[in-house]
Image (cartoon, rainbow, N blue to C red; front, side):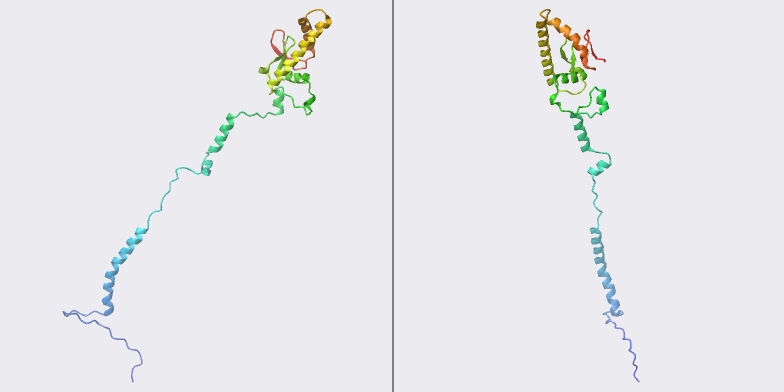
Amino acid sequence: MPNSCPTRPAPFFAPAPPGGSKPAAGPALARPGRARLNRPLIGFWLFATLACIKAPEIVMVDRATALEQQAGGSFEDLELKLARAAIVPRPVPLTPEQLEALGIGPVALVDRTDVTDADRVDDLLRQRCIGEGRDGLLIDTHHACRGATDRAADVILIERVNHARVQLWKWMCAERKEGSPETAQRIWQQIHVRGVICGAWIQDADGTWSEKKC
């Protein structure tokens, strides 16, 4: 009865080379040859792989960004603005109490179109921008002025008021038909200084200046 199980094939041996050396099996003959051929290829592949790997580039930043400068306490733009603002003249804000201490009262919320020269003179006398001279004439005293005023306009006012006073003295002398304009000026000054507004800047007989007390 024939055997139904598959039989193992007989090993294949290559023909013996000349010289009587022992033949080697077919599969075993190819492995040493492939190993010898693959070693140079493996070495070349490793060299190429290593050659493609390089260290990352390091970028050195010698200047910080604007945000980093501000975080570090550097405010160049703000410092420039402050430096410019320091050299530009501008008004200084003052509280009502500080203005009152300087002798400047609150601005009246009224129509200033009907303000007379006498009203303006009273305001300037209190601010010491003009003074009542001992000869009965107004004097420019802006060196002692408390508060800001238009000096050019004040000088024009002084000239206009003084001119009116001189004309008054001449008229008084002409009406009395006696004495001189200088005498009328002295008498008028003694009477006028009594009615000057309280706090006005007045020149004393010795030439010094003081504030009128009431």
